[in-house]
Length: 322
Image (cartoon, rainbow, N blue to C red):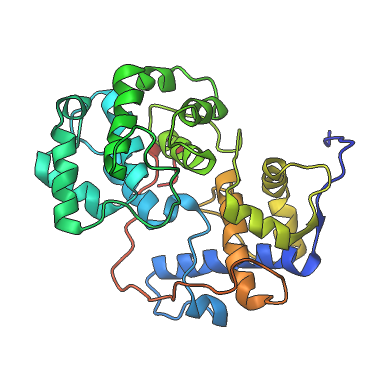
């Protein structure tokens, strides 16, 4: 039986709505061609050839791949609570070089014992000396002095202590009943805004300690909201989160309508985290493809530079993609 709803659905801005699906298909084709070892360029699209865009599937991007392989599924001995702490800590910094220096300093991945003793703090101080910066610039973090420390990373250390040592967050996460509850547990803490809480919830859900559908809940960030304002004339009676899930449900019909070949990620279809990310990337793409659409951001900052090293992919084994 089809779903019956009295809600007014989103009203597409047809040209841009179609571009959303075109971008998804063409960007995924680039990913697949590179994976197959084809020589660049992997597309005839001048915008995709010139500028850098994220992968269609979040789990295939560089930082997520590192997270899944080297944090969620590393083979070092650690407790479930240790691993959940590691996932939250890695996502907070989102900088591979920070994590690698911390590992080199400790000789292993950090544990809650390291957090309690101050050894993790020393490892981060060493990483800061070596690399100059602990954080990526990909995320805008909430106010950094919530715990009264003058330096951002010291406030985050206090956050981790609050979460995992004082509150026993690890056990609460493992006992959660939904992805939305995971989000809510994270969002209750200082420094954990809407977007960071959602991204961290998705990371935790990659592990074998937490297992919910990525379509159970979504929390669009500011980039996705900008994209929605271009893709749609109006969201109708739908919230931004409902709009993302509306796109998830429509994907097969829309690819078919437009004659676009889209096989997903080794057969895995787009999920909510991917569709909300596609709104962000469509916003960027439209800065060149549809500059007539008014936006606070008018240029795409990052240029595309093809990498020659082979792609090594690792996805959560529970997805059964390999």
